[in-house]
Length: 326
Image (tube, rainbow, N blue to C red; front, side):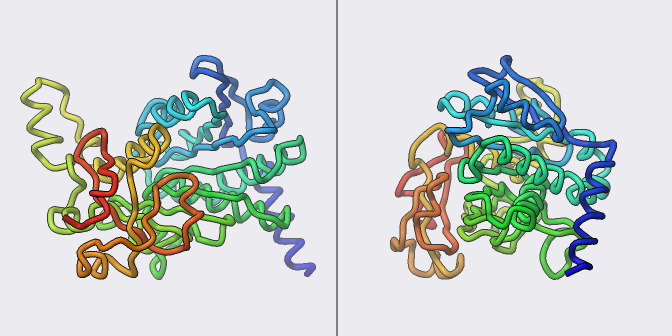
């Protein structure tokens, strides 16, 4: 017990002394009406009404090389605001800066506990733990997992939901991981969404509920619908637009943010079909088992793996037609 207390004290001291602390940016009604504070001053978001303790707050963590205006972060924020909900951005752009992925991956072990400590501050300031939802993209998913685990250790309870959007593979995939990855036990429920498991996202399930997108076409072609060369290279050149290799390379990985934005905007456009594996899903021709609308409420269905197809562009959702492999 003494060793556990000592270890916890050392970790907390390291967090408090970190000079590269991330910030929290809250929004109230619009992206221009915002307040950015250090994680240690998280209670100011409640004091100045950027967080309503009587309502759910969606806390979003961007990925490697991201910030408020890239990787669809702004789209998620705006979609959440448009629903009348409160949203807070975890801005760790310095710690996650491109091009040093290895540094960014290592920093998840710093930023995750910082976010966890910020959550403790918010709960001590009146925000019920049940009103917190964490959403993380890529490396941000692992930050959310670390934060959820930190809350469990220090508060003795769990945040209700973490949504991991194509959690980063490199240095985190189980069996070959160097750093702690998001786990299904980091919250009461964890929704794992997989769009690029052959490259940048984790292949292993990490949620209580895992959704795999377009497994047939992705496995055959190596990219999500709409992320092939015709869509990401030839089309921009024809339109005389700037060629963005970053967007090309990460298209399937970052598609997950666009898909989740649609989940926020529309009700039940994407429906998962439960199966023990993609082989099982294809073999039975997509015959329906526990059809589940992809949403924050997907956890009302029994835990497991779910499979679905999407369009190549918005609206991505195919409804029940997307529950079949072809």
